[in-house]
Length: 477
Ligand SMILES: Cc1cc2nc3c(=O)[nH]c(=O)nc-3n(C[C@H](O)[C@H](O)[C@H](O)COP(=O)(O)OP(=O)(O)OC[C@H]3O[C@@H](n4cnc5c(N)ncnc54)[C@H](O)[C@@H]3O)c2cc1C
Image 1 (cartoon, rainbow, N blue to C red):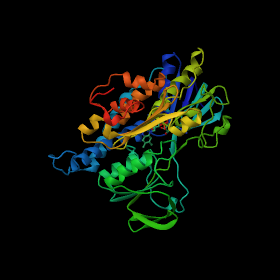
Image 2: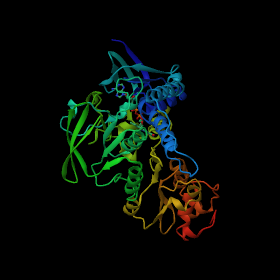
Image 3: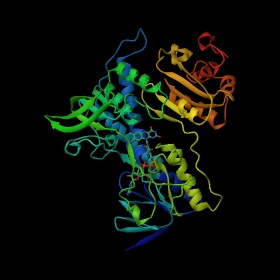
Image 4: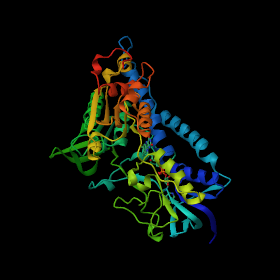
């Protein structure tokens, strides 16, 4: 059997893997990635980019039907979903070529096929062996399937429906859709499908949406926005069984403790993601896993086996990480540096991770929420303000949402921001930079903001510590 030798062997070819391979190349080292599906991994092929492409199309459809301005008449846009999917596939293919495939060659390569460990230094890909001085596990994650009796016997979708060129890709819109789950994938796709004209019912186990890790104001506000559009949301809803009906799927569930049945043309399971660690013969590497199947790593992203590293979705929320592309991408570069450079090792820094849910209006969060700040020992000053206080929101007739700022009451250091509102996923970066630099309330107040912008939400939230924000003039201090 042929054995090829590399400085770095990488399981996976997602954004984490590419960041590591590129850094290895910059260091003059050889690297090989492995991939059993499309090159580039989840984000480009079936996650971030295809979802945001179609979500924006759905927004155009929705906005045309629901103009916010008197004087603009609602206009139904004629829609061809198949063509929309084709353009999505074209955009993705072009992006994959530009940002991933065209980078291959030279000192880094890719081996297509399923990769698994043979021993701690060797990975086998469909009979070919790759031996690495260092190894990076960057196999990402995949959808979790909940314990619903009969699920295996019915047809169901997962977020893989966004993939291109795979049999799981969705190319036709169903008339109705039941979504199991209430996290970011369920909410983003739920609103998107509803806007494309699908009757959507979303089932959330908890008594409210987005309870874990979010401010308590978030769940009810998001729910109100989605329900006002017409998305049906059932909370305290636990699916028990699924069975095939005539041209449909029937889900039996408990809602608020009462039995109920729902029938829909399609079922989408969006109940979270789990690290891909169960099909790589990890036991042959002696790498230790945590109780969520995540690879355990230290602050240098090193596993218990010193030459084996892990980063990206496969480490789950270890070290305060999050399953998001930029986190894996940054950490992939750190792995290559730590494994190959010989320079002092770099530590991961997950202190400031801005994140967003791309519903409309978007929800964006950075830093601590109120509960986390109190648990960390801060005496907390925090305030949630309605978006109607932001001049731009009023000017463009979109006052949905709120902004909440969490600061230390004594030092005034800003510890966290949550924003639900127009452009929140862009604005959150100002807050993130503030947190990174240890900014205080007065830094947000003293910074001149372009008027009128949604970023003024941060300034107004900070001002509200000292003055009634309802009594400010235009670009008030
Ligand atoms: C619907 C959806 C929307 C998302 N939207 C966003 C967003 O807007 N912003 C954001 O930051 N994040 C988003 N994410 C999350 C983001 O896609 C992931 O966090 C990111 O792709 C993780 O990168 P990774 O390199 O760690 O893993 P991946 O990108 O999953 O790459 C791992 C690769 O390894 C391959 N692989 C696994 N096992 C093997 C094996 N044994 N042999 C060979 N190959 C293997 C897999 O096929 C995969 O291609 C979204 C995810 C989904 C599902």
